[in-house]
Length: 286
Image: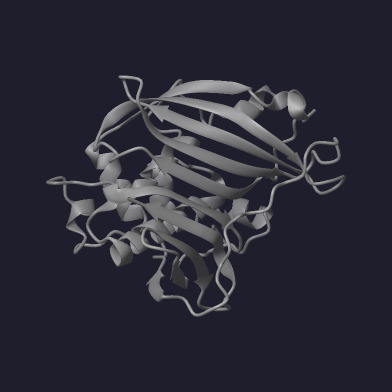
């Protein structure tokens, strides 16, 4: 049963990666030949959202788990089918090394009650430290569990990110290749929804869908190119809410509003119908 007693439950894991993993990730979020710092090992840099990879990775993990190792496994009787990734925040403490071994602590930091029949929101922090014990990055993942509402817990806080009621300062266009989820899953998130047509149909989709965190990676790379090109190490944090599903081959537009000197908010929309893929997004840089 899910209630406030779940807060503090944790698991630990190690995560190792090489420069090849970094380039694979950069390519999976749309890096192109002209973005040489992302696709060539000489002077290689990470698209900072590489920091989300250990959250759901199965590759490079110890102990290995066929599905992402999460502290929610420790909640007795919790039904986890139909879980939905609602929002995500990544805080980066400095340039992400091009290779390394990180120690991960995944801990439930909050549980919110959406009401009887409406589910519950579970926040999990994924904290990554290097061999010296220095924090490299921290993720906060917000999940909807459809089956656990009505236990009398605190309500879900509203986002403090406001999208301005005016034209975006810049609009950035791109498209997912048809192989987008097949490529992105090779970075570690091997959930069948992104590869198996039969599994996708059973889940209610016409075909495999693009990972939400893949869309966030596209947004991160594109905003860096527009706001502080060639210097991804300047990013401090990025966050967003996940909305409409994105499909391979779809075109999209990233709307960006500057909010001061080193902060911007964003929304990513599908060109086909104008529905938001990502919303209430914010990036902060140094």
